[in-house]
Structures are given as structure tokens and as C-alpha cells.
Figure (tube, rainbow, N blue to C red):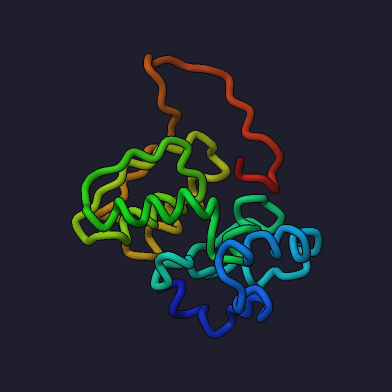
Length: 166
């Protein structure tokens, strides 16, 4: 697995590793976010705080990726809630799945969990698929490289800057 192979290279700052989750997020934002581009190794095989056996490859300089790389968490309260619900099992639809953080957390919650992950950005969907395959979750997470809406059709779509996944 991706995380196991790279876990020994993962050197999140000790200060962040010692802090409780809520303080870790705040400290990262104030102290490390401005210098995040200097920590390239953190973006390969970054383990997730609420599913440490799951890891992700991320985009250096991307807001979501920076948070996950340094803390293992994105949106702390939402992550905790999702992990608690995922333990009960079931299906989830992840609209705007991005790099797969919430999809992977859901699938990791219970072996029988299933997720339909929709991502419209061509530059992001390949990394989403990569993160799912590297964690062996292809049977649990199905990727749809398209947007989701209440009616079918074609729309213009701006994928945004290359260094951002949002």
C-alpha cells in the first residue's frame, strides 16, 4: 500500500504531531501554511488521521492537500462526523470528490461501505483514481469523471489553476 511504503519518509513536524487535532489544525494554518512548498515529501503517501492505514498522494500548494499533508485532516468536524457514521456502514455519494479524502474515509469505515465519487475536473480525477487504486479500494469506491446535477447536459467548466484542486 502507498502509506506503508512511504510511512517511514513521512516526517510531519513534531510540534504538529504532538498537538490535539483542533490545535494541530490551528497551528498548521498559522505556522506552517505559509512555508508549505518547502515540505514536498509530505505530499506523497500522506496518512490520514482518522484512517492511518489509508494514505493519499496530494498536490503541493493546494489548500486541501496542504491541510491533509501537514495534519492528516481536512475539515475536522466533518471528518469526525463522517467517520462515526461510516462505522455503521452503507452507501455515500461524494459530489466533488476532489482527491478522494472523504471517499477514502468512508470506504475505510467498514469493509462493506460503498461510495459513488463524482469529480468533474480532468486534472484532479486521475489523482483521485490513483488514490483509490493505491489503497485497494476499487471495489468500494466507483469514480465518475463528471459533474452531478439535476438534469443532464453539457456546460462549460473552468478547472481553475493547475496548482489547485478546488
